[in-house]
Length: 442
Image 1 (cartoon, one colour):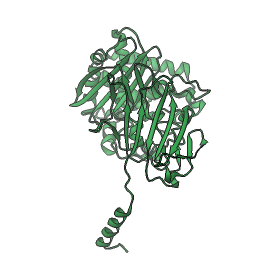
Image 2: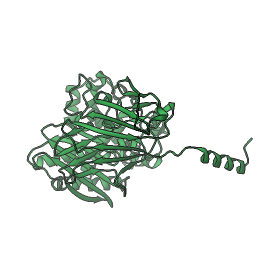
Image 3: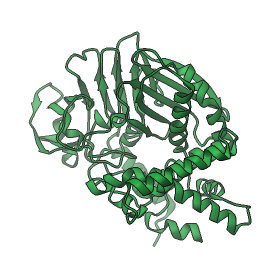
């Protein structure tokens, strides 16, 4: 039978009083010595139990759809007790170090190589998802530098970074009064890339939301103000397309050098590794198209996602069958919102659609379904087909939009469905992975 309210309250108070305080894990990254291209990391922990006896590095990260095995880049790993005495550690797998006596451990120190300039036999980490360390800048994707004790993925984190005083810092993380960057948990930290160094900066607002741009340009040919000038129309169009941005801030991080790669989306930011050159109208349009896709990810998967995305598994890659929604629909929206705002003509939009059709037919397996592509995305066969999510995935979303408009006699399209799903689920509520289609047709 239900317990009386007073007894339940007493029990909760007793549990709260006896439970150890779960304070944040403190991390520090020292960037003052960059000669060896290695990050020097210190972690301060307390209250570890035998259940927390393994320190875990990421096998993959959200939105990358690739095996990374970040433990491959670790070069040294040590643990110490409160008196500074070494605690035995043992590497037990590619991404895991076992702490010999976990309850004694108070400090963990390790060095980890940057991914850009470190050769690996396979599973090369995408540049925009990795780390770069040079004399005038550093790119940090936190999953490629920081791990966590097992069982503590949900523990709050405070990150301190030591860097040259002349450097600027670009990140969606907000610095506290003590100079640290708090994150609510490991997932939040991983979702917050950091670009430091000789950066230019520009700001604007979209539906009242502050948007910042930070840019590293190796030869200073490209400045944040130029990028903002090219992108501002798209950003304002996105605001009109969505009604209001579903975030309270957003940060663009740009890295221009001689190594083109791509872009990676996050909840409150996105980062880009692109080829440097003279800033031209053509470059501005190209950057805008890429940014439009990444920016729209504030909707999918930030506000529309399954439990696989919400509770991400950094130990073992687990694919979601709804990659068509996260990437295909986003790619469609990136161009559709520019068409509907007048930034692109119907002819330009149709030319983009035709281009995607030709690439799909010429370069990919027509028998490979979008669902199969998603479920095999971490395998070699899936990776060979992966880029088609931006072609056939976007085409499929466009066809879905047309069909919805047909069925509703022009009253409702995919844009309206996205708005409905955002209101129904939002950032803190996941849809069931197995029943999304049932939800859509209900």
